[in-house]
Image (tube, rainbow over all chains, first blue to last red; front, side, top):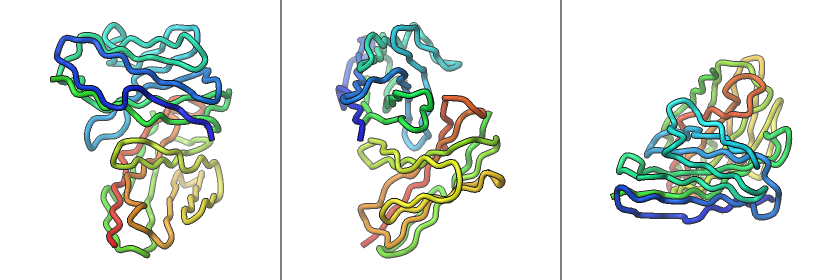
Length: 117
Length: 110
């Protein structure tokens, strides 16, 4: 089946620094990628929807200047957490789809665990 | 916006038992996802279904669109089935965005 990778799988950074997380579709072209955040023992929450070549659409309450999303190619989307703070510590997951009917082709990455000290 | 409720929140069973996890949602949909999240966090899509029943190995998923309810069953459960099982539906009918249930934490003891 289609594979989505994320890098890094785990990152620890100091407060105030920026962290970039990559999401790659390894064997298909991802027209749309979704970025989710999951706090411990909570459900996944959609942060933004990213379409190749256009600006991401952010969910209400998600700061677009803090969580920069770039989807420059059909196989790569990046999420940059700028000026990270301890409250940004979370599990970040991307998913990707390659069809009009996203239900058939949505694949999840393994996630990136971010810890901000 | 769709609201998703899963039950039970936690489930502990002995190896070999038949497992049922339930999911109810509030807004009519065309399809529903069942996902599995292992302790490391990675998510695997188990099923996407829009009607009736689907089976994959020891896993069976059913959905009743009229009653807005879906169930995930595991037959002959095994400790490796221990994970969090999550159902997901469109936020509103026809939408691309997903709304996720809180998940059911399943523990199978040997």
